[in-house]
Amino acid sequence: MTALPPCPSCTSEYTYEMGALLVCPECAHEWSATSDADGPAETVITDSVGNVLADGDTVTVIKNLKVKGSPTGIKAGTKVRNIRLVDGVGDHDIDCKIDGFGAMQLKSSVVKKV
Image (tube, rainbow, N blue to C red; front, side, top):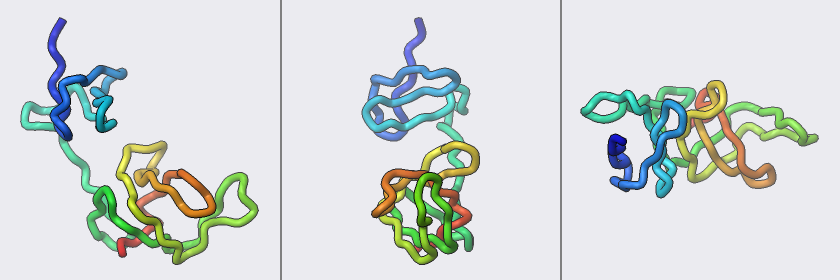
């Protein structure tokens, strides 16, 4: 059995394999098991106007969004605080909580950094 590398985010030694990814149970960081020895290749996520986004940023929704199961959608101008960048379903790359709607994922192309 080969030892798995520690988490590059929090240096936890309790990483485990989940398919082709390595996962840290302490900080929930996921990275490719086949990454270079220099570390995983990080992708840069930008908002609709090209500003680089980071975990914990506050963004504003720039257009009205329909929400499945809700009679009203998310209106343009809604502020979303404390975002988390993820590799979500499809091209949804922001994980967040929106007041009145709860936890959901957004596309970076429909938000603007505040």
